[in-house]
Amino acid sequence: MRDPVVIIGGGMSGLAAAIRLARFELPVLVLERHLRPGGLNSYYYRRGHLLETGLHAMTNYAGPGERNAPLNRLLRQLKLSRQHFITHEQLGSEIAFPSQTLHFGNDIALLTSQIEERFPASRPGFGRLVDFVRAYDPFAIRPWRSARELLATFIPEPLLVEMLLCPLMIYGNSQEDDMDLAQLVIMFQAVFLEGFFRPQGSIRDFLDLLLSHYQKLGGELRLSAEVQALIVRGDEVVGLRLASGEELKAQAVISTVGAPGTMRMLPDCLAGERADYQGRISFMESIYLLPRPALSGVRRDATCIFYSDRERFVYRRPQQAVDLEVGVINFPENFQGLPEGELARIRVTHPANYDLFRQAAGDGPGRGPDYQALKRRCQGQSLAKVGKMVGNFGPKVVYQDTFTPLTIEDFSAKEAGAVYGSPLKVKDGATRYRNLFLAGTDQGFLGIVGAMLSGVTVVNRHVLPDAGRLAD
Amino acid sequence: MTRDAIKEIVIEIIKDIDEEANTAALAADRPLRDQLDLDSMDFLDIVMELRKRYKLQIPEEDYPQLNTLESCVNYLEPKLRHL
Image 1: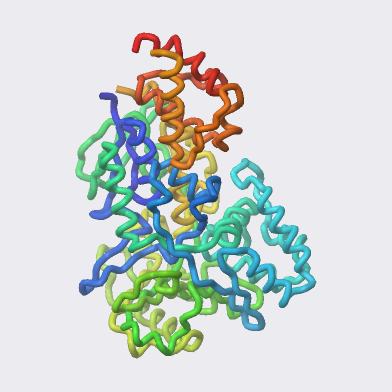
Image 2: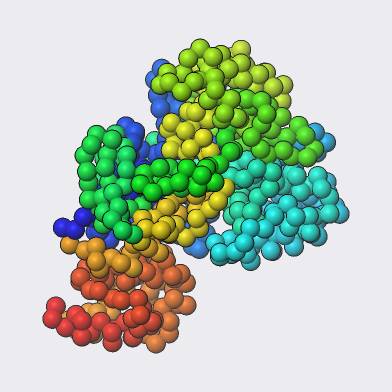
């Protein structure tokens, strides 16, 4: 048996890459630092309640018949049956600005008709924009181009440009203020043309499905296995050293811990080079649990509300700890056909400043009282703000928890809590080492479907064509 | 292995890759990709399945020879003769 292909990180991109290799009986080993796989998209228990992280809604919805849609291509590549993959589509979402609101769903016709009604001068341009997005290949290698400028060439009303950017940036842009055109196209397709859904059950069920499939195919997963360093010889990675001191051999390595996280494991990395790949966009998120009857005073019609209190949408690391004037309010119960549980959840997300949370926490292992106080204060302000928007549910909350950029950094291998990874994307996943590849959000793919497709693509492009050498 | 048996294997692999593939009406001399709406990702799976099942190494430069059902059989016949 040859040395395995080692995958660093058991999140969505790593598991997809691993399943793809195991499917063809190639030796593969996933190393996950934590006790539970999933990375950013995982779950935990508090007082017996399962709480999900990451997933608000999956993007890229496609019905079973749309065989070339990203979701269905992904399932086919992983040899998972679309017929058995039960989905719940969103009820509908909205973009709320001070002077205007737009609703959208999983059929672009809704957003188009809303634009026709509220921004009639932009209706023809919006139609041309949709055609442009459908025809554009976002994975071709091209120089960076401003999404804001491109949108302005189609859409004459600046407020509409800001409103369209709001959900697309919040759900997947790693840059401040503007967005690469290719990224805009990816997000526009994922959010407006395909739309939001949830798989049946929780993220735990989805992870369990991926893991049992992987293990049935003969793949190996090691938990609590933190990689400390990559062992290199010339332009080749020959093995890995774990935090425990153990050394493992590898035929090839696929790293899903981001460009800066991977560089940190290499012997010849320059600190300045690593800093170029570190993102600045991070978030604070609070999850609230409340008894279902308590939802009576709260809006029940939306799946996600993306809002901006400013007519010009500001998307950047805020000066203060959190930016309450921008956010997403997500209602995980508001999908079609979900069974009713005893408790309902509401999740609220705002842009947040990593450095300020880091300063409050200090550099030690514990987080300390200043950090806890900052977190509590921000969460309280957020709750008051959101209560005014959707109905004051605060007094009925039976349990709440808040993640900061530091929590994201700890649990997702995203340096500085930059959920969407590096602003510099390594689109083809290649590195200067011939058998080391990157997969995940640092390739420009986003969301759960995107992350998984990135794992699949890297395996297809770099590992399978060489599979002869990897055999036996 | 006979030509008919090889043809059955290719069809079985296609069905395995795509649960919805309609292989009943496949014309032997027309490109598989057009008839089955296979993309390059799906196509790679045919190669990988052949490798997995029969330890066949198919180099990238030979992929065009798997274009139609008939050309698949022509290409695979000498390689699977011993089975």
